Amino acid sequence: MNAVTIDPEGWAAVGEALLPEAIKLRRAIHAEPELGLDLPKTTAKVKAALAGLPLEIREGPSTSGVVAILRGPANGRTVLLRGDMDALPLTEDTGLAFTSQHEGAMHACGHDTHVAMLAGAARALCERRDRLPGSVMFMFQPGEEGWHGARFMLEDGLLEDPTPDAAFALHISPNMPAGMFASRTGPLLASADEFEIKVIGKGGHAAMPHEAIDPVPIAAEIVLALQTLVSRKVPVSDPAVLTVGKIEAGTTDNVIPETATLLGTVRTLDERIRKLMHEGIERIATHVCAAHAATAEVEITWGFPVTVCDGRIVALAQATATSLFGEQAWRTMPQPMMGAEDFAYVLQKLPGAMAFLGAVPEGGDYHSCCGLHSNRMVLDERVMARGVAMHCAMAEAFLNGEAVV
Ligand SMILES: [Zn+2]
Ligand SMILES: [Zn+2]
View 1 (cartoon, helix red, strand yellow):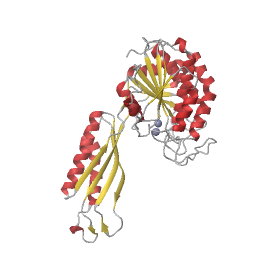
View 2: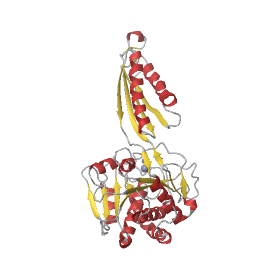
View 3: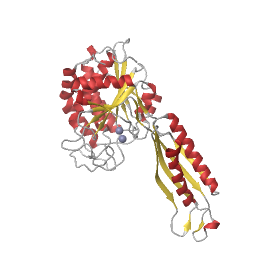
View 4: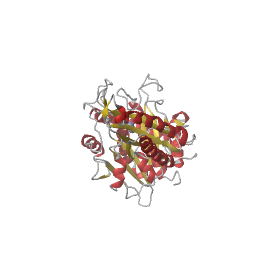
């Protein structure tokens, strides 16, 4: 794609001009992080940032998410831009002046910057609404960190009327050069499901195991057998991860417990492999238990689906990023990552893409600096200027007819 209808000088300058405002909002949100689906303080800050703009504001019953619509001509396209708003349950240890005031909560995934960039883009696009031949839907969503906030907002019907024709989101990353964008066509992030296996044996005296059914060695056998799912059942060309992250059994050295519990995560990049893994977990747990006269209770909790990017929107993102900031500002990722993202629900409904935006702190090494979800994660806030510009330029280019979807 060559002739992308964007305005490189214009949007890059707009992003820079809005940077001080974005930094202020980001820091205010960073200082008061909130968890889950109900984020009253964060939502209030978003609404304050949007106050006075020509936007229709929508909220739903299930979450404190906010959708703001900039209406353009009815016969035009609609593009959805998304920013997630929630923090993580961990205690910050960055020493930043605007460090978290809420013990046990921190914006360690950079969602504070996502909100600030999206609010900046909303202001910039509203100020230039006359030149937009369509509508823009700004989706401020809570509950990304495992709470299914995007799914609830879809179910609440917040993302209809006008129906978006495409969707775009940014995710900040300290593990990439500052100001670089990256994405890929196809799977970008994995599905992530949780499984719990309860091995039910028979308790007894540790000196007389023959009179009990000891769930501990059975649990150990299940852990090992589960590893053969990835190595022996999944085609080597299809990435899959299965990790048992927690094992719990027993109380002391001389008692055989009645039960043992395993908790784990299973991740894939393909819905077919996802199903195969679920069936395999159930089969192995049930039959290993049966082999030892124990029983298994298996519970699989469906998490986020695979995040799949549409090649047309990825190509538009690449053309936009390189037009705005030069060839060095884009990297096509050779492989997906096995993290997960609930923007996947939006991308199941709409053609779209998520791109990462590099934000390694000044003087840091992006290979080794603290990554997302670390209690010491810090970012170069200045890249938010590029994020604002990217949101705006992507929206304008799409509304101008770029990327046939
Ligand atoms: Zn995260
Ligand atoms: Zn995140």
